[in-house]
Length: 102
Image 1 (spheres, one colour):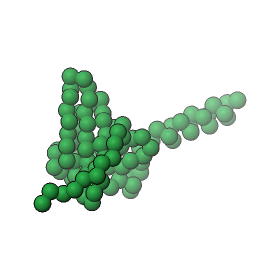
Image 2: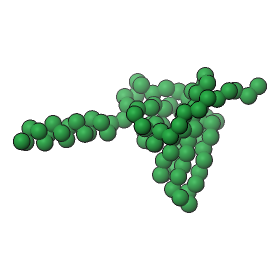
Image 3: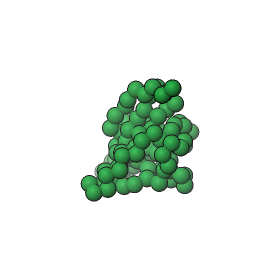
């Protein structure tokens, strides 16, 4: 019984881990939609090619608009590395097609 509990605990903790640093990609933060009155912060990242990804958080993430950030998508989470190198998990809400303005 004890072995099953330990196995279950280890399995759950592995599922909750952020992706490895090597799996992060570089992108540009193209939009921040701040709604602090309802604790909703939406971050849209562009991969530089044609896709953008949006993640929603209940807390503000210290990042700068129109600057490069590192991000990773794992399951239903979009992870963003902030200006200080800290990893923040957001709920991955949508993917969009983006065309660069000329």
